[in-house]
Every structure is written in C-alpha cells, then in structure tokens.
Amino acid sequence: MKHIGLVLLVAYGILLASQSALRGDYLLLVAIYAVTRYGGSRMLRLHKFLLPFIATAIIYDSQRFYARWLSPTIHVQEPYLFDRRYFGMRLGDQLLTPSEWLQFHTHPVLDVLSGLTYLIYIPQFIFVAAYFYFWRSKKSASQNDLVIQRRAYAMPWSFLWVNAMGYATYLLYPAAPPWYVSEHGFSQPTAAVASNPAGCVRFDQLFGTDVFASMYGRAANVFGAIPSLHAAYPLLALLFAFYFRSRIAVFCAIYYGLMCFSAVYLNHHYVLDVLWGSVYAVVVFAGCEIWANHKTSQENAFAAATQRLNSFQLQRPDRDRLPLDMQ
Image 1: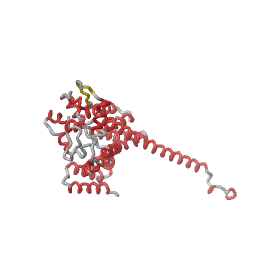
Image 2: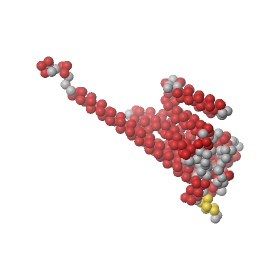
Image 3: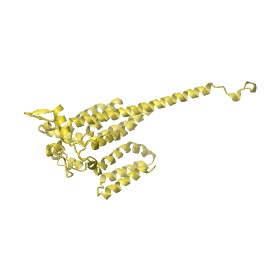
Image 4: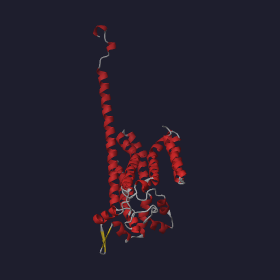
C-alpha cells in the first residue's frame, strides 16, 4: 500500500496515453507527487498538504471519460427560469436573468477585475490553506492548541470534499451555464458542444492573450455549472479564516464577494449556482467542525480515563512491600 498513490497515477497516465490525451500538466502532477512523497522526511509534510489537491485534479480530469455518458440529458431551461423568476432584472420591457442583464452593462475595468478574480480562484484557496497549515498550526503547537492544528490539517481535505460533492452534483444534475443559453437557446446540447470562456474572452482580448481560451479548452465537464465551485472555494477559505480569527479573513471576504459577482458577470454562472456552491462550502466546513470536535472529545475522554487509571494505581498499596502477615 505504500506506493498505491504512484501506481494509481501511472495507471491513469496509461489511460490518458491510450486516448492520446496525455498532457504536460499531468506529468507535472506526477513529478510533484513523486518528489514530495519520496523526497525524504522533510518533504513528507508538504506531500500530505498537496495530496488532496492532486487527488482533486485527477478526479476532475477523469470526468472527460464518463460525464456525458452518465449524464446524457442536460438541464438547460430550469436554472435559467429559476434565476429570472427570483432574481430577474428589467431592461426595458424585458425581464432578464442577472447574467443576461450584466452582458448589457460590461466595462473594461470590470472585465479586468473579474478576469483576475477568476484566474486565481484555486491559488487563493491553496495560499490560505498553506498559511494555516504551515504557519498557524506551527504557532499553535507552541501553545499546545491541538484543536487549531486539527482544523488547519483538515482544510486541504475540505477542498477535496467540496469538490467531490460538486462533481457528484454535476453527474446527478448536469446543467447548462448561462453562456450556453445565450448562444444556443434552450435546445439540448450535442456532443460537439465545447466549453466556452464566455465573458472571460473580453479579458483575453484586452491583453491580447489566450489564457482563458486555453484554460476552458481543457475543461473536462462542459455542463458542470451547478454548483459554482468558483464560489465554494473562497467561502470555504473565509469560514476557516473566521474560525482562526485571522486578518486574512478580510481579504477572503472581499475576494468571495468579487467571485460571486464575477461568476455572474462573466456569464459562467447563474445566481442559483453561486448560492448552491456557497451552501456546499458551509456544509463541508460544518462537517470538518463535527469531525474535529468528535476527535477532540475522544482524546479528552481517553486522557481523562488515563488520568483516573494513573490516580488509582498511585493510591493502591504496594503489596510487595507489605509484611507477610499483612498480605
């Protein structure tokens, strides 16, 4: 079992190669895994931190092989009608969804701000998680605060769990993003429909790049719109930052607000998607709290039992030292 992770990575690489889908980012993941796993004891902590992120990347990428097969019918109209009914905005005599309305009110400044927000959504979570995992937990160790350490160690795994919930929802309720309705209406998608950078293309045009075009060209699941994991990640980071009472919480709160706006402004998500992703973040954080509290209760109970046992043994007379007529 010691090398099971590397074996699974290699097996997945063979699958990619057989489908002519082997890319440099996969090879980079394998290299990171190998170096941190077999690079000595000093690298082991980094390996434990990165493992949930590597696992998430592989699980996400694997959806290209089964997402459309497991979810042949895409929900196109329901999310659109939900947003228009509960969050609809007027433009003349038309009632539009917020994402539709915002496409008539774009601005280069908003394009840049939203584009940058979208670019760093995964690095932002990793940065915050690394801060608590490597620095805050170390600081807490000197204060003997095992509760804080446990939550810091749970944060990287919370990323995997929120993604697992999101990916399961993609398969159970595959939904078309707003850009699909803008381009194709309510018709059922065909297999030829590819992912689209939507409003992010304005960022590419402003800077003469193809960053988003390339990013969305590698998307593994075109119809994974509900929930918005773009919104889930920053809220999850914010909840942990609030728990740790860190000043980073201010940055996380601002970033979460920007992400919620950007997801709708860039025509990638409905408000429904953002709310759904936010709920998943709260659920996962609550799960981490329950787990951490349960482990703490178990350890406290064990410590109390050990203390009682030691106290009993100290109070018990030593029969070996008693005179024979008293034994």
